[in-house]
Amino acid sequence: MKLRSPLRRQTLWVGFVAVLVPLAVLLVLQYRWLRQLDNTSGMVHRAALVNFLEGVSNEVAYSYRNDAGRVLNLPPAVFTQGDLDKAAMWFKKKGVEGGVKRLFVVSFAHDRDGEVLFFQSTCSSFAPPSWSPEVRAVWVATAPWRMLAHKNETLEHVALTVDEKDPRYRMLINPITDDMSHIVGLAGMILDSDYFERRLLPRAVEKSMLQFFSGETGQCPIVSVWDGHGRLAYRSEPDARQGASEITKAFPFVFTDWKIGLASGSVTPAEVARRSFVINFLLSLALAAALLGGLALAFQTAARQMKLSQMKSDFVSNVSHELRTPLASIRVFGEFLRLGRVDSPEKAREYGDYIETESRRLTQLVNNILDFASIESGRKSYSFETVDVEEVVGETLKTFGVRLRQSGFRIAFEGPASPLPPVRLDRGAIAQSLSNLLDNAVKYSSGETDIEVGVRHDGEWIAIWVRDHGIGIPKDEQAKIFERFHRVSKGLVHDVKGSGLGLSIVQHIVQAHRGRVTVESRPGEGSTFSILLPVVPGTATARSPLPAARPSPFEA
Image (cartoon, rainbow, N blue to C red; front, side, top):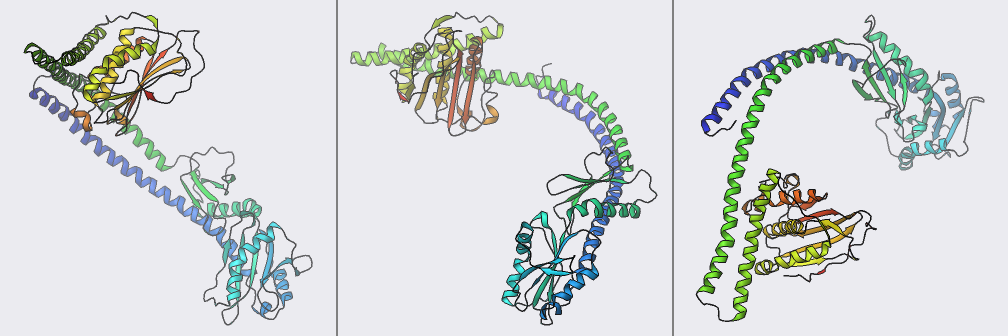
Protein backbone atom coordinates (compact mmCIF):
# COMPACT_ATOMS: atom_id res chain seq x y z
CA MET A 1 0.00 0.00 0.00
CA LYS A 2 1.47 3.34 -0.97
CA LEU A 3 -0.18 6.65 -0.15
CA ARG A 4 0.73 9.38 -2.61
CA SER A 5 -1.41 12.29 -1.48
CA PRO A 6 -2.43 14.08 1.74
CA LEU A 7 -6.04 13.18 0.97
CA ARG A 8 -5.34 9.47 1.33
CA ARG A 9 -3.50 10.03 4.58
CA GLN A 10 -6.42 12.04 5.91
CA THR A 11 -8.87 9.32 4.83
CA LEU A 12 -6.83 6.73 6.68
CA TRP A 13 -6.80 8.82 9.83
CA VAL A 14 -10.54 9.57 9.61
CA GLY A 15 -11.38 5.87 9.29
CA PHE A 16 -9.05 5.00 12.15
CA VAL A 17 -10.55 7.65 14.42
CA ALA A 18 -14.16 6.78 13.42
CA VAL A 19 -13.62 3.24 14.74
CA LEU A 20 -11.45 4.17 17.67
CA VAL A 21 -13.58 6.90 19.29
CA PRO A 22 -16.84 4.94 19.83
CA LEU A 23 -14.90 1.93 21.00
CA ALA A 24 -12.85 4.04 23.40
CA VAL A 25 -15.99 5.66 24.83
CA LEU A 26 -17.56 2.26 25.43
CA LEU A 27 -14.43 0.94 27.09
CA VAL A 28 -14.10 4.01 29.29
CA LEU A 29 -17.71 3.82 30.50
CA GLN A 30 -17.44 0.13 31.27
CA TYR A 31 -14.09 0.61 32.94
CA ARG A 32 -15.40 3.41 35.18
CA TRP A 33 -18.41 1.37 36.29
CA LEU A 34 -16.40 -1.73 37.06
CA ARG A 35 -13.65 0.27 38.72
CA GLN A 36 -16.15 2.07 40.92
CA LEU A 37 -17.57 -1.24 42.10
CA ASP A 38 -14.09 -2.61 42.67
CA ASN A 39 -12.93 0.46 44.60
CA THR A 40 -16.00 0.48 46.83
CA SER A 41 -15.58 -3.16 47.77
CA GLY A 42 -11.85 -2.70 48.23
CA MET A 43 -12.25 0.31 50.51
CA VAL A 44 -14.72 -1.52 52.73
CA HIS A 45 -12.44 -4.50 53.01
CA ARG A 46 -9.35 -2.37 53.62
CA ALA A 47 -11.12 -0.38 56.33
CA ALA A 48 -11.92 -3.62 58.13
CA LEU A 49 -8.27 -4.69 57.95
CA VAL A 50 -7.04 -1.30 59.17
CA ASN A 51 -9.43 -1.40 62.14
CA PHE A 52 -8.29 -4.92 62.93
CA LEU A 53 -4.63 -3.88 62.81
CA GLU A 54 -5.31 -0.94 65.10
CA GLY A 55 -7.08 -3.29 67.50
CA VAL A 56 -4.06 -5.60 67.73
CA SER A 57 -1.64 -2.69 68.16
CA ASN A 58 -3.82 -1.05 70.82
CA GLU A 59 -4.14 -4.34 72.71
CA VAL A 60 -0.34 -4.76 72.79
CA ALA A 61 0.23 -1.13 73.82
CA TYR A 62 -2.48 -1.34 76.52
CA SER A 63 -0.96 -4.47 78.02
CA TYR A 64 2.48 -2.91 78.39
CA ARG A 65 1.19 0.49 79.52
CA ASN A 66 -1.04 -1.15 82.12
CA ASP A 67 1.79 -3.26 83.55
CA ALA A 68 4.23 -0.33 83.52
CA GLY A 69 1.72 2.04 85.12
CA ARG A 70 0.88 -0.45 87.85
CA VAL A 71 4.44 -1.58 88.65
CA LEU A 72 6.74 1.36 87.87
CA ASN A 73 4.72 4.17 89.47
CA LEU A 74 6.85 4.28 92.64
CA PRO A 75 6.29 6.97 95.33
CA PRO A 76 8.99 9.69 95.26
CA ALA A 77 9.65 9.09 98.97
CA VAL A 78 11.47 5.81 98.32
CA PHE A 79 14.16 7.90 96.59
CA THR A 80 14.11 11.15 98.57
CA GLN A 81 14.20 9.29 101.91
CA GLY A 82 16.63 6.67 100.68
CA ASP A 83 14.23 3.85 101.53
CA LEU A 84 14.66 1.54 98.58
CA ASP A 85 13.41 -1.40 100.64
CA LYS A 86 9.92 -0.01 100.21
CA ALA A 87 10.50 0.00 96.46
CA ALA A 88 11.49 -3.67 96.66
CA MET A 89 8.32 -4.48 98.60
CA TRP A 90 6.34 -2.48 96.02
CA PHE A 91 7.76 -4.52 93.16
CA LYS A 92 7.07 -7.77 95.03
CA LYS A 93 3.52 -6.74 95.86
CA LYS A 94 2.55 -5.47 92.42
CA GLY A 95 4.46 -7.99 90.40
CA VAL A 96 3.80 -8.81 86.74
CA GLU A 97 2.23 -11.85 85.15
CA GLY A 98 4.98 -12.23 82.59
CA GLY A 99 6.84 -10.50 79.82
CA VAL A 100 9.43 -8.83 82.07
CA LYS A 101 13.00 -10.05 82.37
CA ARG A 102 14.22 -7.55 84.94
CA LEU A 103 13.00 -4.69 87.12
CA PHE A 104 15.43 -1.97 88.07
CA VAL A 105 15.67 1.43 89.73
CA VAL A 106 18.10 4.31 89.37
CA SER A 107 18.31 6.72 92.31
CA PHE A 108 19.59 10.29 92.00
CA ALA A 109 18.93 11.13 95.65
CA HIS A 110 21.34 11.09 98.57
CA ASP A 111 24.57 9.28 97.87
CA ARG A 112 23.34 6.94 95.14
CA ASP A 113 24.35 9.33 92.33
CA GLY A 114 22.59 7.46 89.53
CA GLU A 115 23.53 3.95 90.61
CA VAL A 116 21.67 1.17 88.78
CA LEU A 117 20.10 -1.41 91.09
CA PHE A 118 18.42 -4.57 89.86
CA PHE A 119 15.49 -6.10 91.76
CA GLN A 120 16.25 -9.52 93.24
CA SER A 121 12.89 -11.32 93.39
CA THR A 122 14.26 -14.21 95.45
CA CYS A 123 15.21 -11.99 98.39
CA SER A 124 12.96 -8.99 97.64
CA SER A 125 15.83 -6.51 97.62
CA PHE A 126 18.00 -4.47 95.26
CA ALA A 127 21.61 -5.17 94.40
CA PRO A 128 24.12 -3.55 92.03
CA PRO A 129 24.66 -5.99 89.12
CA SER A 130 27.95 -7.15 87.72
CA TRP A 131 28.89 -5.66 84.36
CA SER A 132 27.15 -7.27 81.36
CA PRO A 133 25.61 -6.25 78.00
CA GLU A 134 22.30 -5.97 79.81
CA VAL A 135 23.71 -3.53 82.35
CA ARG A 136 25.38 -1.53 79.58
CA ALA A 137 22.04 -1.24 77.77
CA VAL A 138 20.42 0.13 80.96
CA TRP A 139 23.22 2.68 81.40
CA VAL A 140 22.82 3.86 77.79
CA ALA A 141 19.03 4.10 78.12
CA THR A 142 19.19 6.09 81.38
CA ALA A 143 22.04 8.40 80.29
CA PRO A 144 19.73 11.32 79.25
CA TRP A 145 17.97 11.19 82.60
CA ARG A 146 21.31 11.29 84.42
CA MET A 147 22.16 14.47 82.58
CA LEU A 148 18.83 16.07 83.57
CA ALA A 149 19.31 15.04 87.18
CA HIS A 150 22.88 16.33 87.18
CA LYS A 151 21.68 19.74 85.90
CA ASN A 152 18.87 19.69 88.48
CA GLU A 153 16.35 20.68 85.82
CA THR A 154 12.59 20.48 86.33
CA LEU A 155 10.25 18.24 84.38
CA GLU A 156 6.82 19.73 83.83
CA HIS A 157 5.50 16.70 81.96
CA VAL A 158 6.51 13.21 83.03
CA ALA A 159 5.56 10.27 80.83
CA LEU A 160 6.45 6.64 80.42
CA THR A 161 9.18 6.26 77.79
CA VAL A 162 10.32 3.37 75.63
CA ASP A 163 13.97 2.63 74.84
CA GLU A 164 14.79 0.22 72.01
CA LYS A 165 18.35 1.26 71.15
CA ASP A 166 19.40 -2.33 71.74
CA PRO A 167 16.61 -4.66 70.45
CA ARG A 168 17.88 -7.39 72.78
CA TYR A 169 17.04 -5.27 75.81
CA ARG A 170 13.87 -3.30 75.16
CA MET A 171 12.78 -1.41 78.23
CA LEU A 172 10.06 0.84 79.63
CA ILE A 173 11.30 3.64 81.91
CA ASN A 174 9.18 5.74 84.27
CA PRO A 175 10.85 8.93 85.62
CA ILE A 176 9.96 9.75 89.26
CA THR A 177 9.85 13.44 90.29
CA ASP A 178 9.43 15.13 93.68
CA ASP A 179 7.09 18.00 94.61
CA MET A 180 9.47 20.50 92.94
CA SER A 181 9.34 18.56 89.63
CA HIS A 182 12.98 17.54 90.01
CA ILE A 183 13.82 14.04 88.87
CA VAL A 184 14.81 11.90 91.83
CA GLY A 185 14.87 8.44 90.30
CA LEU A 186 13.89 6.03 87.58
CA ALA A 187 11.91 2.82 87.66
CA GLY A 188 12.18 0.53 84.69
CA MET A 189 11.52 -2.91 83.30
CA ILE A 190 13.40 -4.92 80.67
CA LEU A 191 10.90 -6.69 78.40
CA ASP A 192 10.92 -10.34 77.42
CA SER A 193 10.77 -10.64 73.60
CA ASP A 194 9.96 -14.36 73.76
CA TYR A 195 6.90 -13.63 75.91
CA PHE A 196 5.75 -11.00 73.45
CA GLU A 197 6.15 -13.40 70.52
CA ARG A 198 4.69 -16.55 72.12
CA ARG A 199 2.05 -15.26 74.55
CA LEU A 200 1.07 -11.62 74.25
CA LEU A 201 0.93 -11.37 70.44
CA PRO A 202 -1.28 -14.47 69.89
CA ARG A 203 -3.59 -13.32 72.70
CA ALA A 204 -3.96 -9.85 71.19
CA VAL A 205 -4.66 -11.29 67.71
CA GLU A 206 -7.27 -13.72 69.06
CA LYS A 207 -9.04 -10.99 71.00
CA SER A 208 -9.17 -8.71 67.97
CA MET A 209 -10.47 -11.59 65.81
CA LEU A 210 -13.40 -12.05 68.15
CA GLN A 211 -14.07 -8.32 68.20
CA PHE A 212 -13.91 -7.54 64.46
CA PHE A 213 -14.69 -10.81 62.65
CA SER A 214 -16.97 -12.70 65.00
CA GLY A 215 -19.52 -14.72 63.02
CA GLU A 216 -17.94 -13.96 59.60
CA THR A 217 -16.92 -17.44 58.52
CA GLY A 218 -14.11 -17.41 56.00
CA GLN A 219 -13.56 -13.67 56.32
CA CYS A 220 -10.88 -13.71 59.06
CA PRO A 221 -7.55 -12.37 57.77
CA ILE A 222 -4.25 -14.18 58.04
CA VAL A 223 -1.96 -12.28 60.41
CA SER A 224 1.81 -12.37 59.98
CA VAL A 225 4.37 -10.64 62.17
CA TRP A 226 8.04 -10.10 61.25
CA ASP A 227 10.74 -9.09 63.72
CA GLY A 228 13.32 -6.37 63.14
CA HIS A 229 15.50 -8.74 61.07
CA GLY A 230 12.68 -9.71 58.71
CA ARG A 231 12.17 -13.15 60.31
CA LEU A 232 8.61 -14.46 60.38
CA ALA A 233 7.91 -14.51 64.11
CA TYR A 234 4.19 -15.31 64.07
CA ARG A 235 1.41 -16.35 61.71
CA SER A 236 -2.16 -16.89 62.79
CA GLU A 237 -2.59 -19.83 60.41
CA PRO A 238 0.85 -21.47 59.96
CA ASP A 239 -0.36 -23.95 57.31
CA ALA A 240 -2.29 -21.42 55.24
CA ARG A 241 -0.99 -20.29 51.87
CA GLN A 242 -0.70 -16.52 52.01
CA GLY A 243 0.21 -14.13 49.25
CA ALA A 244 1.45 -10.58 49.62
CA SER A 245 0.07 -8.73 52.64
CA GLU A 246 -2.67 -6.26 51.80
CA ILE A 247 -1.60 -3.89 54.56
CA THR A 248 1.44 -3.72 56.83
CA LYS A 249 2.25 -1.48 59.74
CA ALA A 250 4.81 -1.17 62.50
CA PHE A 251 3.77 -1.42 66.15
CA PRO A 252 3.36 2.15 67.44
CA PHE A 253 4.39 1.89 71.11
CA VAL A 254 6.90 -0.86 71.74
CA PHE A 255 8.59 -3.35 69.40
CA THR A 256 8.41 -0.57 66.81
CA ASP A 257 10.85 -2.35 64.47
CA TRP A 258 8.45 -5.30 64.22
CA LYS A 259 5.81 -5.24 61.49
CA ILE A 260 2.40 -6.81 61.33
CA GLY A 261 0.90 -7.75 57.97
CA LEU A 262 -2.67 -8.69 57.11
CA ALA A 263 -3.95 -10.63 54.13
CA SER A 264 -7.31 -12.18 53.38
CA GLY A 265 -7.56 -15.85 54.23
CA SER A 266 -10.09 -16.56 51.48
CA VAL A 267 -11.79 -14.92 48.55
CA THR A 268 -13.17 -11.56 49.66
CA PRO A 269 -15.96 -9.51 48.09
CA ALA A 270 -13.30 -7.18 46.76
CA GLU A 271 -11.56 -10.05 45.00
CA VAL A 272 -14.82 -11.31 43.50
CA ALA A 273 -15.55 -7.84 42.14
CA ARG A 274 -11.99 -7.53 40.86
CA ARG A 275 -12.16 -10.87 39.05
CA SER A 276 -15.43 -9.89 37.41
CA PHE A 277 -13.91 -6.57 36.43
CA VAL A 278 -10.85 -8.23 34.91
CA ILE A 279 -12.82 -10.85 32.95
CA ASN A 280 -15.30 -8.38 31.46
CA PHE A 281 -12.73 -5.78 30.69
CA LEU A 282 -10.34 -8.27 29.10
CA LEU A 283 -13.11 -9.53 26.80
CA SER A 284 -13.79 -5.97 25.68
CA LEU A 285 -10.10 -5.35 25.15
CA ALA A 286 -9.73 -8.54 23.12
CA LEU A 287 -12.50 -7.48 20.74
CA ALA A 288 -11.02 -4.02 20.47
CA ALA A 289 -7.52 -5.38 19.89
CA ALA A 290 -8.69 -7.61 17.04
CA LEU A 291 -10.21 -4.62 15.26
CA LEU A 292 -7.42 -2.21 15.97
CA GLY A 293 -4.79 -4.76 15.02
CA GLY A 294 -5.88 -4.82 11.41
CA LEU A 295 -6.01 -1.03 11.24
CA ALA A 296 -2.65 -0.73 12.93
CA LEU A 297 -0.99 -3.11 10.46
CA ALA A 298 -2.38 -1.17 7.51
CA PHE A 299 -1.35 2.13 9.04
CA GLN A 300 2.13 0.83 9.89
CA THR A 301 2.65 -0.42 6.35
CA ALA A 302 1.63 2.92 4.90
CA ALA A 303 3.80 4.82 7.36
CA ARG A 304 6.79 2.59 6.58
CA GLN A 305 6.42 3.16 2.87
CA MET A 306 6.13 6.92 3.36
CA LYS A 307 9.16 6.94 5.62
CA LEU A 308 11.20 4.90 3.14
CA SER A 309 10.14 7.24 0.35
CA GLN A 310 11.25 10.24 2.38
CA MET A 311 14.55 8.56 3.24
CA LYS A 312 15.21 7.83 -0.43
CA SER A 313 14.41 11.46 -1.30
CA ASP A 314 16.88 12.62 1.34
CA PHE A 315 19.41 10.11 0.02
CA VAL A 316 19.14 11.47 -3.52
CA SER A 317 19.43 15.05 -2.24
CA ASN A 318 22.47 14.30 -0.07
CA VAL A 319 24.21 12.24 -2.75
CA SER A 320 23.67 15.06 -5.24
CA HIS A 321 25.42 17.41 -2.84
CA GLU A 322 28.23 14.92 -2.23
CA LEU A 323 28.77 14.48 -5.98
CA ARG A 324 28.66 18.21 -6.68
CA THR A 325 31.40 19.12 -4.20
CA PRO A 326 34.29 16.95 -5.56
CA LEU A 327 33.22 17.58 -9.17
CA ALA A 328 33.36 21.33 -8.57
CA SER A 329 36.87 21.05 -7.08
CA ILE A 330 38.10 18.88 -9.98
CA ARG A 331 36.65 21.35 -12.49
CA VAL A 332 38.26 24.40 -10.84
CA PHE A 333 41.75 22.89 -10.60
CA GLY A 334 41.43 21.45 -14.09
CA GLU A 335 40.62 24.94 -15.45
CA PHE A 336 43.64 26.36 -13.61
CA LEU A 337 45.83 23.81 -15.37
CA ARG A 338 44.17 24.37 -18.78
CA LEU A 339 44.49 28.17 -18.58
CA GLY A 340 48.18 27.92 -17.70
CA ARG A 341 47.92 29.52 -14.28
CA VAL A 342 50.53 27.16 -12.93
CA ASP A 343 53.86 28.92 -12.54
CA SER A 344 55.93 26.05 -11.12
CA PRO A 345 56.13 22.24 -11.16
CA GLU A 346 55.39 22.23 -7.42
CA LYS A 347 52.12 24.10 -8.02
CA ALA A 348 51.17 21.71 -10.79
CA ARG A 349 51.87 18.79 -8.47
CA GLU A 350 49.76 20.40 -5.76
CA TYR A 351 46.83 20.88 -8.12
CA GLY A 352 47.27 17.33 -9.31
CA ASP A 353 47.12 16.11 -5.71
CA TYR A 354 43.88 18.03 -5.19
CA ILE A 355 42.38 16.56 -8.35
CA GLU A 356 43.48 13.05 -7.40
CA THR A 357 42.12 13.41 -3.86
CA GLU A 358 38.72 14.66 -4.99
CA SER A 359 38.63 11.92 -7.63
CA ARG A 360 39.26 9.32 -4.94
CA ARG A 361 36.54 10.91 -2.81
CA LEU A 362 34.17 10.74 -5.77
CA THR A 363 35.20 7.16 -6.44
CA GLN A 364 34.53 6.24 -2.80
CA LEU A 365 31.03 7.71 -2.97
CA VAL A 366 30.27 5.90 -6.22
CA ASN A 367 31.70 2.68 -4.79
CA ASN A 368 29.45 3.03 -1.75
CA ILE A 369 26.41 3.42 -3.97
CA LEU A 370 27.40 0.49 -6.17
CA ASP A 371 28.23 -1.69 -3.17
CA PHE A 372 24.91 -0.84 -1.59
CA ALA A 373 23.13 -1.87 -4.79
CA SER A 374 25.09 -5.14 -4.82
CA ILE A 375 24.32 -5.78 -1.17
CA GLU A 376 20.62 -5.10 -1.67
CA SER A 377 20.46 -7.48 -4.63
CA GLY A 378 22.60 -10.15 -2.91
CA ARG A 379 25.32 -10.01 -5.59
CA LYS A 380 28.12 -8.60 -3.42
CA SER A 381 31.17 -10.90 -3.38
CA TYR A 382 34.59 -10.69 -1.70
CA SER A 383 38.07 -11.92 -2.55
CA PHE A 384 39.76 -13.15 0.62
CA GLU A 385 43.50 -13.42 1.09
CA THR A 386 45.88 -13.63 4.04
CA VAL A 387 47.31 -10.16 4.59
CA ASP A 388 48.93 -7.93 7.21
CA VAL A 389 46.21 -5.69 8.67
CA GLU A 390 48.69 -2.96 9.63
CA GLU A 391 49.78 -2.73 6.00
CA VAL A 392 46.17 -2.29 4.81
CA VAL A 393 45.62 0.45 7.40
CA GLY A 394 48.80 2.22 6.34
CA GLU A 395 47.85 2.24 2.67
CA THR A 396 44.41 3.62 3.50
CA LEU A 397 45.88 6.41 5.63
CA LYS A 398 48.23 7.36 2.81
CA THR A 399 45.28 7.59 0.44
CA PHE A 400 43.50 9.92 2.85
CA GLY A 401 46.63 11.98 3.45
CA VAL A 402 46.09 14.73 0.88
CA ARG A 403 42.43 15.25 1.72
CA LEU A 404 43.14 15.45 5.43
CA ARG A 405 46.01 17.87 4.84
CA GLN A 406 43.70 20.10 2.82
CA SER A 407 41.20 20.15 5.70
CA GLY A 408 43.85 20.71 8.38
CA PHE A 409 43.38 17.33 10.10
CA ARG A 410 46.07 15.37 11.89
CA ILE A 411 46.17 11.63 12.56
CA ALA A 412 47.81 9.95 15.57
CA PHE A 413 48.51 6.29 14.87
CA GLU A 414 48.75 3.58 17.55
CA GLY A 415 50.38 0.42 16.24
CA PRO A 416 50.64 -2.99 17.91
CA ALA A 417 53.42 -3.74 20.37
CA SER A 418 54.34 -6.92 18.52
CA PRO A 419 53.76 -8.34 15.03
CA LEU A 420 50.13 -9.16 14.33
CA PRO A 421 48.95 -12.66 13.42
CA PRO A 422 47.65 -13.03 9.85
CA VAL A 423 44.05 -12.30 8.93
CA ARG A 424 42.07 -13.44 5.90
CA LEU A 425 40.23 -10.49 4.40
CA ASP A 426 39.30 -8.62 1.28
CA ARG A 427 41.92 -5.86 1.13
CA GLY A 428 39.75 -3.44 -0.85
CA ALA A 429 36.64 -4.01 1.24
CA ILE A 430 38.43 -3.44 4.56
CA ALA A 431 40.14 -0.36 3.11
CA GLN A 432 36.72 0.93 2.05
CA SER A 433 35.33 0.31 5.55
CA LEU A 434 38.20 2.21 7.17
CA SER A 435 37.79 5.00 4.61
CA ASN A 436 34.12 5.31 5.52
CA LEU A 437 34.98 5.55 9.22
CA LEU A 438 37.63 8.20 8.53
CA ASP A 439 35.18 10.09 6.34
CA ASN A 440 32.67 10.10 9.22
CA ALA A 441 35.35 11.30 11.63
CA VAL A 442 36.09 14.25 9.33
CA LYS A 443 32.43 15.12 8.74
CA TYR A 444 31.44 15.08 12.39
CA SER A 445 34.62 16.58 13.83
CA SER A 446 32.93 19.90 14.74
CA GLY A 447 36.26 21.75 14.40
CA GLU A 448 38.34 19.16 16.31
CA THR A 449 41.14 18.29 13.88
CA ASP A 450 42.76 15.41 15.83
CA ILE A 451 41.82 11.89 14.74
CA GLU A 452 43.29 8.75 16.28
CA VAL A 453 43.62 5.48 14.40
CA GLY A 454 44.94 2.28 15.89
CA VAL A 455 45.47 -1.44 15.42
CA ARG A 456 45.77 -3.90 18.28
CA HIS A 457 45.71 -7.62 18.92
CA ASP A 458 42.92 -8.60 21.31
CA GLY A 459 42.95 -12.38 21.87
CA GLU A 460 41.35 -14.01 18.82
CA TRP A 461 40.56 -10.65 17.24
CA ILE A 462 42.42 -7.92 15.43
CA ALA A 463 40.87 -4.54 16.19
CA ILE A 464 41.05 -1.52 13.87
CA TRP A 465 39.67 1.55 15.61
CA VAL A 466 39.06 5.18 14.69
CA ARG A 467 38.49 7.83 17.35
CA ASP A 468 37.39 11.41 16.80
CA HIS A 469 36.72 14.20 19.27
CA GLY A 470 33.70 15.68 17.54
CA ILE A 471 30.03 16.04 18.34
CA GLY A 472 29.39 12.41 19.37
CA ILE A 473 26.27 10.28 19.01
CA PRO A 474 23.34 10.18 21.48
CA LYS A 475 22.85 6.88 23.30
CA ASP A 476 19.41 6.26 21.81
CA GLU A 477 20.76 6.68 18.27
CA GLN A 478 23.76 4.34 18.51
CA ALA A 479 21.75 1.20 17.72
CA LYS A 480 20.27 2.80 14.58
CA ILE A 481 23.29 4.36 12.89
CA PHE A 482 24.12 1.15 11.01
CA GLU A 483 20.71 1.08 9.32
CA ARG A 484 20.55 2.05 5.65
CA PHE A 485 19.75 5.72 4.92
CA HIS A 486 19.68 6.47 8.66
CA ARG A 487 21.23 9.75 9.70
CA VAL A 488 21.24 11.18 13.22
CA SER A 489 18.86 14.12 13.31
CA LYS A 490 19.92 15.80 16.54
CA GLY A 491 22.20 18.72 17.13
CA LEU A 492 24.89 19.62 14.63
CA VAL A 493 24.64 16.23 12.90
CA HIS A 494 21.55 17.45 11.08
CA ASP A 495 23.65 20.00 9.19
CA VAL A 496 26.18 17.44 7.88
CA LYS A 497 25.54 16.12 4.39
CA GLY A 498 25.94 12.44 3.64
CA SER A 499 24.35 9.48 1.88
CA GLY A 500 23.48 7.55 5.03
CA LEU A 501 25.07 4.39 3.54
CA GLY A 502 28.62 4.49 4.89
CA LEU A 503 28.12 2.73 8.23
CA SER A 504 25.57 0.31 6.76
CA ILE A 505 28.19 -0.81 4.22
CA VAL A 506 30.87 -1.03 6.93
CA GLN A 507 28.69 -3.36 9.00
CA HIS A 508 27.88 -5.59 6.02
CA ILE A 509 31.55 -5.87 5.02
CA VAL A 510 32.71 -6.69 8.54
CA GLN A 511 29.95 -9.26 9.06
CA ALA A 512 30.95 -10.89 5.77
CA HIS A 513 34.44 -11.25 7.35
CA ARG A 514 32.82 -12.93 10.41
CA GLY A 515 33.66 -9.88 12.48
CA ARG A 516 31.67 -7.14 14.15
CA VAL A 517 31.59 -3.34 14.49
CA THR A 518 31.23 -1.55 17.83
CA VAL A 519 30.77 2.10 18.74
CA GLU A 520 31.41 4.02 21.95
CA SER A 521 30.27 7.61 22.01
CA ARG A 522 29.05 10.43 24.22
CA PRO A 523 27.58 13.69 22.91
CA GLY A 524 30.18 16.45 22.92
CA GLU A 525 33.10 14.05 23.56
CA GLY A 526 33.48 12.24 20.25
CA SER A 527 33.11 8.66 19.05
CA THR A 528 35.23 5.52 18.76
CA PHE A 529 34.38 2.97 16.07
CA SER A 530 36.10 -0.44 16.19
CA ILE A 531 36.29 -3.09 13.47
CA LEU A 532 36.97 -6.52 15.01
CA LEU A 533 38.31 -9.15 12.59
CA PRO A 534 39.04 -12.79 13.54
CA VAL A 535 42.62 -13.99 13.17
CA VAL A 536 43.49 -17.09 11.16
CA PRO A 537 42.65 -20.14 13.35
CA GLY A 538 45.64 -21.55 15.20
CA THR A 539 47.64 -18.29 15.14
CA ALA A 540 45.94 -16.39 18.02
CA THR A 541 48.25 -15.48 20.90
CA ALA A 542 47.84 -13.71 24.20
CA ARG A 543 46.44 -10.20 24.18
CA SER A 544 49.11 -7.61 23.49
CA PRO A 545 49.27 -4.40 25.55
CA LEU A 546 48.18 -1.16 23.95
CA PRO A 547 51.20 1.07 23.21
CA ALA A 548 51.32 4.79 23.84
CA ALA A 549 50.05 7.04 21.04
CA ARG A 550 52.67 8.17 18.57
CA PRO A 551 52.48 10.36 15.44
CA SER A 552 51.52 8.32 12.43
CA PRO A 553 54.11 7.71 9.70
CA PHE A 554 51.14 8.34 7.38
CA GLU A 555 50.31 11.61 9.15
CA ALA A 556 48.59 14.22 6.99
